[in-house]
Structures are given as C-alpha cells and as structure tokens.
Amino acid sequence: MKIFYVPCLEDNYSYLIIDESTGDAAVVDPVEPEKVIQSAEQHSANIKFVLTTHHHWDHAGGNEKMKQLVPGIKVYGGSLDKVKGCTDAVDNGDTLSLGHDINILALHTPCHTKGHISYYVTGKDGESPAVFTGDTLFVAGCGKFFEGTAEQMHQSLCVTLASLPKPTQVYCGHEYTVKNLEFALTVEPNNEKIQQKLSWARQQRQANLPTIPSTLEEELETNPFMRVNNPEIQEKLGCTSPIDTIRVMRNKKDQWRG
Picture 1 (cartoon, one colour):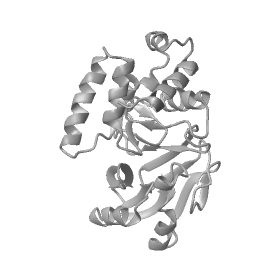
Picture 2 (picture 1 turned 135 degrees about the horizontal axis):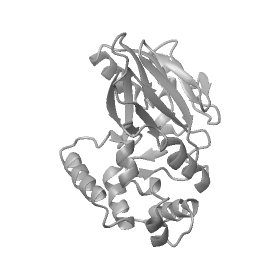
Picture 3 (picture 1 turned 30 degrees about the horizontal axis):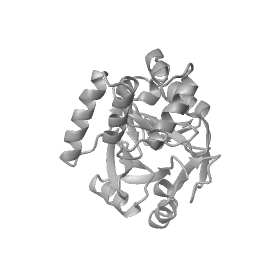
Picture 4 (picture 1 turned 30 degrees about the vertical axis):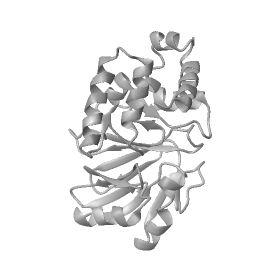
C-alpha cells in the first residue's frame, strides 16, 4: 500500500491510496480533482473510487467534477451527511476493498458533522495501517463541534479512534499542526513529547514540508483532546470528567488566538 498526499486550497490535504499489486487507487476528499488525477497519473494509478470524510465544501466540493473526469467512478460518503456527488452511502462498520491487498473500514466519527466518516485502511501483513480522519482528528487537535456534542467527540476520539492499533498512521484533512501543538503546550506546558514535536513541526513547515502522517501512538502522547482522561489535565481545566474536559478545552481552543 502506498499513500501520497496532495496539498489543496490553502491548507487542505487530499490523499491517494494505491494498491501496489494492481495499481488501483482510491482518493480521499479530492477537493481539487485535477491535482489528484495528475498525482494518480504520475504514479501510474487507476482511480476506482472516492472516499469522502464529510460534507463540507473543502472536502466534498470536488466530487461532482471527479465524476465528470472519471466516468463511472463511485463516491462514498457517510449516510447521515448530505455529501455532494455521493453515489454510495456508508455506515459505521461497512467495508470496502481496493485491488488485491487493501481493505477499508468505515468508522462513524461524528461531532464536526453528524455523519463524519473516518476510513481505516489496512494493506499487506507487516504494513502499518492508516486512518484518514478528515476534520475529526487533526495532528495534536480536533475539529470544531459544528453539528455534535462533547460526548460525541469524546466517543469519536477517545473510544473509536483510540482503539485502533498504536502504529496506525494518521492522515488528517488540514495542516494545522503547529498551531495545535502551541495550544497543546498551554494545556500541558511540561509535556516533553509536545515540546519535541512542536520543534520538529516548525522545522517541517519552514522547509515547506508536511507534518503528516502522525501515528496514533504520538497522538495519545501529544494531543490534548485525546488525553482528557488524564486527571492532571482535568484538574488544570477545573473539570471532573473526560467529557466536561473535552468541552471546556474545545471552548478554550475556539477563543485562543495563539
């Protein structure tokens, strides 16, 4: 399994997932279809379908154009989201296959939108799995609670996604990492893992390089929204439960200007 990122718009990422034995490919959130198709051509890949994480235009806005450029292409999206151009709705636990070796599991991760889907992708034995988290889980952050509740985001991050294998590579929808880590340091100023990752992320961005992928293990160590079970974080925010903590933390992040 090979994964390539395609920078789009100001700070979005689309992704190309390729099954190496067949050259079959899936694309995640192809908001600028021409760029994604060009990437597929460069890697001699044959695009079979689109995986849409959620209905927001900067993720689903290229779906109709993809259908024009790749006749007959399937476009998957969450059954509870009104995804533009969707041909096939998916629900939590639905599975897809790509080529010979790739399996894709749809995980319902609501809150940012009602029907947000993350896609958990596994390849051959020995290859690290990957998860495409759209705007639910960012590197060191999470999406705004536009259509859901703190309970839902806690379930999506700290139960659904946190239960995936720790080596899972995390591919998110935006390049927000530096700001997210700067905020994370306001929550845990003494967390050395956050300090180290922030230093690395700043170097990456200065060199115009991406900060993706992260790993689930790194997120559990550095992402404050996945660390709300930590009593010290709860105490710092004046909370007594993980759900209250994630709610208060998101409110603080929404008002924080860095």
